[in-house]
Image 1 (cartoon, rainbow, N blue to C red):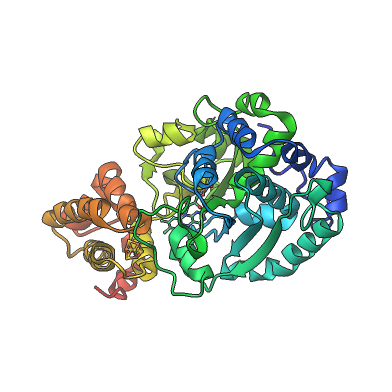
Image 2 (tube, rainbow, N blue to C red):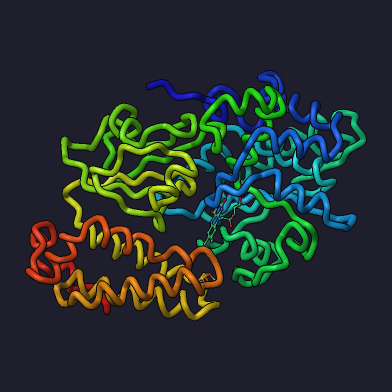
Length: 434
Ligand SMILES: Cc1cc2nc3c(=O)[nH]c(=O)nc-3n(C[C@H](O)[C@H](O)[C@H](O)COP(=O)(O)O)c2cc1C
Ligand code: SF4
C-alpha cells in the first residue's frame, strides 16, 4: 500500500535549513496567497477544509482561530506545541527535522488570520538538539523575506521565537505549556478563561500541534476542496501514524485519515516481528485504549476510533505481541503517569498512585476480584474530577484492558498464574513497590 505524502513531501528531498530549497518546491506560496486575504477569509478557508487538530483532541482548527480573531487586544500569539511527550511518538520530530519551514509557514498564516505578529515554538527538552536546525531555518526564512518584517512585501510582520521545556510530559498540555514559557513550574491552569481569550502572557493565543500547523500550507496552496477530497467526511486530510512496539516494520507513515488499522499493521508494517502472534494494540499513546487482536478491523480517523471507545490521539499505534503480559504493559503505563502527574489536583495525584498500587498487587498474584471494581470506580472518579487530560485518561489502558483481556486478569487473580509472567520466575514482579 502506497503512502500519500502531503506532509512528508519534502522529507529527505531538501536541506531542512534552506528556505530557498523549500521555496523551490513551492514553499511559502501558500503564505503569499494568505497574505492577500483578510483574517476572516483565512479562517473561512480553514473551516471549509475541515482541518482538525492532530495533537490529541481533534478540535476544529478554525474555531481556535475564530476565538483569538474575535478577542479584543493588540497583542496576540501563535504557539506551536512541539512537546511531543507521548511515549513512542515521533511524528512531530520528523516534521521539525526534515521540513521546518512548512511549520513556520503554517504559523505565519495563522498569525495573519488573527493578526498576531509573534509565534513561539515550544520544543520538548529531549529535542533540544533540533534547536540549531530550527534557528538556522528561521534565519534562512528571514533572509528570504518569508519571516520577519514586511513578509513578501505585504506589510505584515511575523517573527518566530524558540523555547525549550525541561522534560515534563504535562507541559504538552496547553496551559501548562504557557506556564512553562512564562518561566513558572509547568502546571495546568483552571479554565475558563480559554487560551483564545487569555493564553500566553495573558493574551489571546492560538496553540496548535506541529502536525496541525504543517497541514495549513497545503490547504492554502491547493485549496480547501482538494483537502476535503482526502480522508473521511469528518476527518479530512492525511495523518501521520507512528507505529512502534512489536511491528515487523516500525516508523512514521503518512496515509489518508480512515486507513484500516489491520491493513496498516499487516500490509504496511509487515505484521508482527519474529513471526509472533498479535496480542493487542494500543492506539493514541500511553493513555489510549488497549484492544485485542479481534478488534483491529477498524478505520483510523478521529470519529471512528472514538466510536469504538478509544481515541486516535496523536496517531501512535503500539503493536503488542504474545510474548507480553497485558497486565505488565498496563502497569508500565500507570508507572509513567503516576510519575508525570504534576500533583496539582488530588484525583490524579492520589488516584494515579493508587491505580499503580492496585495493578502491581494484581500483577504479583495478590489481587482480588474486588480490586477490579475499585479500579473501575477510581477510573470514573478521575475521569470526572481531574483538572486536565492527564488525570482524565490515566485509567483508560486499565479499564479497556479489563474489558478486552478479562481472562488475563482472572488468571492473575484466580489462578495466581500467568503463562507469560511465570517465565520470569516471579522475581521481576517482586521488585515492584506497592
Ligand atoms: C497531559 C497532556 C499532554 C499533552 N501533550 C501534548 C503534546 O506533547 N503535543 C501536543 O501537540 N499536544 C499535547 N496535548 C494536547 C494539547 O493540550 C492541545 O490540545 C494540543 O496541542 C492542541 O493542538 P491541536 O488543536 O493542533 O491538536 C497534551 C494534553 C495533555 C492533557
Ligand atoms: S490531572 Fe494530574 S497532571 Fe493534570 S493538573 Fe491534575 S495532577 Fe496535574
